[in-house]
Image (cartoon, rainbow, N blue to C red; front, side, top):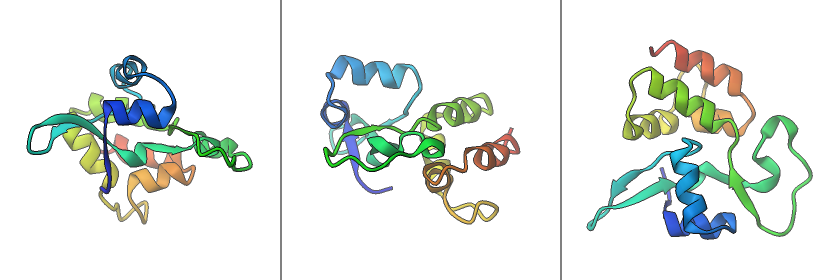
Length: 126
């Protein structure tokens, strides 16, 4: 799964404050889990993408400013999986586990702009 970010790290990466980062989690735009020796709430860093890729279907020319944003297609996928009974840890695991039908992990497919295909696969899990 790679790097994990605490809420202050998410806030810094997005150029906002911790209150706004917490709101992003509460709105289910991203999910996370408590982890580490002294368990703190953390989210996978890959949920944040270069700003020009937040909506892969409308990708723009890359900016050189290094801004990050939350992958737009993540929220609907999270809601779909939660409705299927997945808790946040299971959602993260599913997003990062390679899927034979997709030919890659669901998260990689979302980043590549294959939202509809990912959600069709997710719907079969209910």
